[in-house]
Length: 423
Length: 111
Image (cartoon, rainbow over all chains, first blue to last red):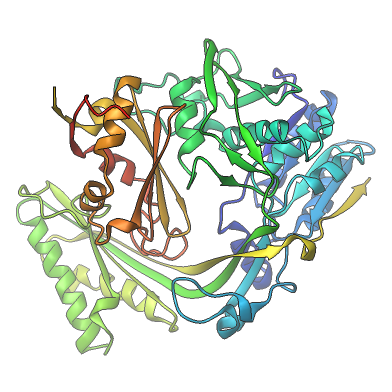
């Protein structure tokens, strides 16, 4: 913020599950409904950003953008920021508008209507439109719930460069810039390092990327001098394509983006010029993610080391599985067994011939029934005294499981709304 | 001349996820390897490498301008980030598994 001479700074904070978790926390009274880190981040950047006329844009509003905007306004006042203006964008919550009977579950038979009592949230991916409307109100901060990640960047670009949504080359270029920047450090060498050929200098002080965007939608990507990381064709390619189903048609609320002809030009050290994105009009529908309560996941872990560790870990797993059936009357097949350090990430591999020096047994279960997750954690703990020799370091945990059902909603049913709060 | 390679020696990769699908990008270090790679990475070979029972659960597409290959492994993540009970619900480690794949490259297959 101090050195970048930025017009806009974007914080993209929502994974697919985040809004549902925030909604559950709100319902339980254990959370505010917005990103728990929002105020800490704003405390760090707000005074300098206002001084430098950098507008902050974030989707950290999660399940409660208006409450988040109120909190940021109040924080601003407590930091001595006079006449601060914070916009909240809502309208992504479409639970009331969805036709549950017409929404299939996908992987399983039935529709959302059949499990309507388990629905937590339903949020549409809004486009840039609402963000532009908010920026037109001359605000310091824009806080949204669910939008497309790229829209958080495209909105400011459309506002600043006076692009209209029909100007497809520009909209495609701006969306591409958003897509590249949204994971921040993942463009500048984060999540990239692997041996000599993929060496990344200074990861402990990784510099985040920024873009200087031209009126035609092309852009120069950079990071600040003196920061760690690297920014080149290779790092850009991984970020550009790693979450794209179809490079010819990446669907966003604002444009159908075709990246096949994109040109990444290493125009300087740690500098890439990007151009050539092609856009087609977006579909008439918006993507919606519906989150559904899915019971609990329980897991327990225990370590074994030295000669015979694999056999002891397998014996331990067999003991728990036998008790699961004989003592608790449950189904053996609901238990998942992983041998961490041996086949945890790749259970399909045929057994390796060599025994590892140590192995960590991990048992897990997902169940809609009360107490089953806790039961598994307890059974693994009992291996301390009643299992094979030399087991150590038991941990157990229980967490919520959420199902996510993707669907579509007609645009005419979705109405972005902007509310501006000022001090 | 035909040569046998381990993917990680000639390309780099990153894995992502959308719901229960695993998405992977594969980028050859040397652009000259793009066409031979694209031809050698058949859905059959990929399904075998990832232990997928149906070859139609794999799609391979490419961005020729970018010399990069995009793979989609459908329904591969055991329920995805929110539901899988496994140690890597995102399937982020699948990129490293991809790079362990052994392939025969035929330079004559220019596309």
